[in-house]
Image (cartoon, rainbow, N blue to C red; front, top):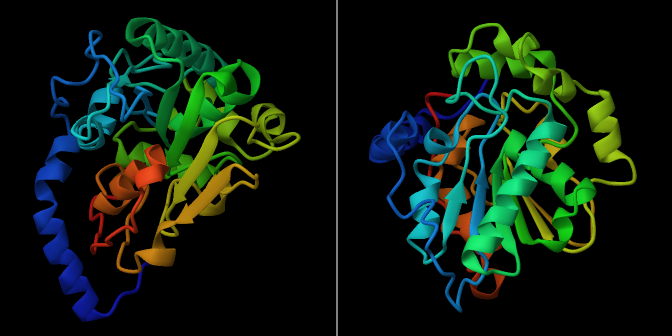
Length: 285
C-alpha cells in the first residue's frame, strides 16, 4: 500500500487533475498525424528516427498517445506498430512469443531505415517493449542498427504471476494474461527458458546506449528491479531517486511528464538537462 501524508496526497490530486487531458489521451485518442509519416526525413539535429515499442496487452496508438506526439514535437521522425497480436485481434498486441515479436521489430526497423535513409534508429519501449527490444539487440543484429535504446517500466528478469494478473485487471483482459492465449506471458515468469537465454552473459551488448527507467511503485513488474541491469553503456534511473513526489505505477509511466523528460534526455544526451520534477500520481494504476 502506498502511504503519503495528507498534504502530499492533496498536491498529487491537483497534479492528477492537471494531467487529466493526457490520461484521457491514453484511453484511445490517436497520436498526432506526424507519427508514421513515411516521407519524414530526419534532421541534422535528430538524425535517428525513433521507433516506439508498446507493452504487453497494449497497442501502439493507445500506449503512446501522449509520448509519441511529445517526441515528434521535438523534431524527430517517429514510427510505431502494434506487434505480437493474437487471439484478441489486431488491437491487442504483445501476446505472441517474444522471439517472434523481436523478429517483427527487426523487419520494422529495416523498413524505417529504408524509408528515411538513416544509418540507425533510436528505440523507446514500455514494459514488454523493452524486453523484446533487448532480445532484438542481442540476438537479431539490432545492436548495429540502434544508437539509443530507452525503456520505461523496463523488464528483463520477468515478473510474478501476480504482476501479470494485475496487468490483466488494469487492461480489462480477464484471465488471458495468466498464460492462456499469451505465450509471452509464460515467457515472463521468472526462470523461463526465454529469460534464461536473454539474461545469460548479461542483457546489454556493446553498441547502443541503454537507459532503463523504473518506478518503485510498479505493481506489474515485480520486483521493479527487474528493469535494472549492469553494463558500461547502461544508465539505470529509479524515478523516485530524483522525483520524490512521483508515485506512478506501471501504466502511468506512459503519461508521466517526468518519464517523458527522462526519455527526451536519453534520446539526445548532448543537450540533456536536469529533469524538472513535478508531482505525479497515477490514480488509474
